[in-house]
Image 1 (tube, helix red, strand yellow):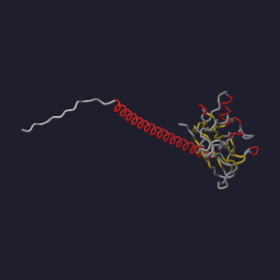
Image 2 (cartoon, helix red, strand yellow):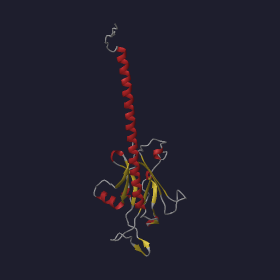
Image 3 (cartoon, rainbow, N blue to C red):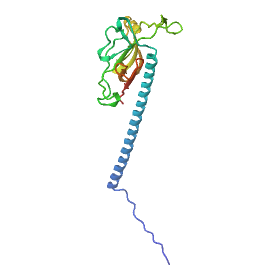
Image 4 (cartoon, one colour):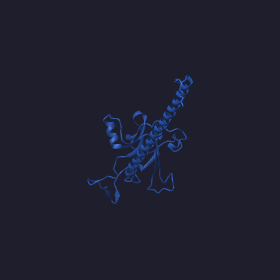
Amino acid sequence: MIRAARLSYPARGMTLLEVMVTTVLFALLVGVAYTSLQSVRAFTRTNSTQIDLQESARHALERMIDTLRNSGRFTGNNNKPYPCIFKSASGLPTGYNNANAHPPKVNPKAKPGSNANGGDPTLDSDEIIFKLPSVDANNIPVMSNGRIQWAPQELGFFIVPGPDNINQLELRDSAVSAAQQASGQKVQGTVICRYVDRIQIEDYTTDPTLTMRQLRITLYLTRIV
């Protein structure tokens, strides 16, 4: 006769050591997962910011190009050249309409040596003053004796401190600025873009490869995330 044997073992709970090991492993897994999630979030936030800044810079450059394309190089009253390119730290050049004078830009956000600002965020910004042609009711430039008649007001692209001390690029019209001053308002131009550290404007005098009708504009934007 064959009899089946049944073996049984008493049930036991986890020891304290096993609980501790399990807890540590679980904590490590949670830590790794959290770190990975934070890395992904940081990458996504940084990448999104870069895309936003690139889009802002592209729109700003398109606006500047469209506006400056309608201007011209000529000598105005008192032998003032247009366009006039100058360093923002020096203020408006002598003889130009001071209605567009403005406070200097605040400190750059990019760190020294960072490629985000052309390698050196401490470099000064360029600014430009120019004029547009006078136009008739059909928005056609007015001509006199075969020459373009230029409107009296001076326009310019300037970097000024905006809200929260964030530098912004503005298009200012001296006639509008003068009217704002006369009415006691704060001078405010059309904001082209924000988070501007520096702008570089070159012409044939600084780059011989450019013709008299060409400008090269480089815009540096920095936003801390």
